[in-house]
Image (cartoon, rainbow, N blue to C red; front, side, top):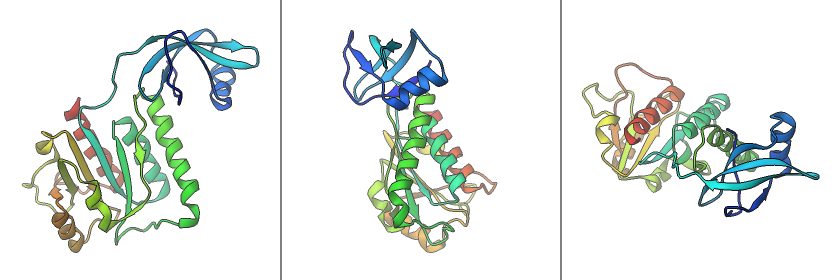
Length: 236
């Protein structure tokens, strides 16, 4: 069943007119007509019947879908900037795993740096990626992707459980799964080169707890998806 996020609040029996892009996808790409779709407005999820009406493609709101396809834990992923294709993979999969907020940040070992002249275009692309992923997996909300922040600003994104994956943490250190008795969790993942010792100490001073992801050294994108998977699994 195809899903779309829509802006207006709808009521049963009302008609929603799809945007030009949505209509093209439904009518010309998927070739749907008089079939059920799922529409998610800011407060509700609806089952609706889509069909052509003159030049427009519309949907009749039939009934509310009571399912809330969100984890019970609010998950924030603070992700260091990594190479574009890998970072975009993390965005897509984090959205599918139920992450509520993604915070890109720069650290001393990042090989990628934010470029102010591309920031708006980049934000729009990030938004498009998480929107598409959220529609595909039938979420009720689209994750927030914040502006790129400095490493020192990560203290603003702490949660009840604030964790930092550290590749040099002892295998006997705390595991992520041991810190899921909280209503909100933030996990910080470093870049390809990991964190410096000074950065780890700064994270600790901010209130983050270093955690181990196991005995193997994982790539940055793998570490992010593994951490989010563990948190999401414990939240459903």
